[in-house]
Length: 97
Image (cartoon, rainbow, N blue to C red):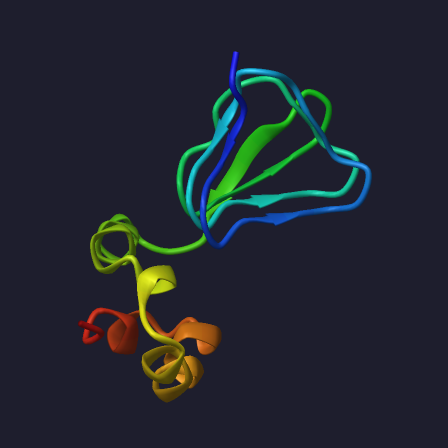
């Protein structure tokens, strides 16, 4: 099957992603992880086999980030909002449009 890696994903060194797996937007895959199952958006997965150990944000913020799809913004808009996007303050992230 097709392997799909979403937007805003970080994959650690020597991680293995098996065929047919979908890694959701904003996910983090730890170094040396072996990903055999789909990984939900904005979660952190580690280990062999990889398992989700935590969410990066609350469900409300994850839903908002998936809705606004900031990775499709213009470079100018991203630069204008870079501090909010990189600091991870949930209150400020929910204000992004």
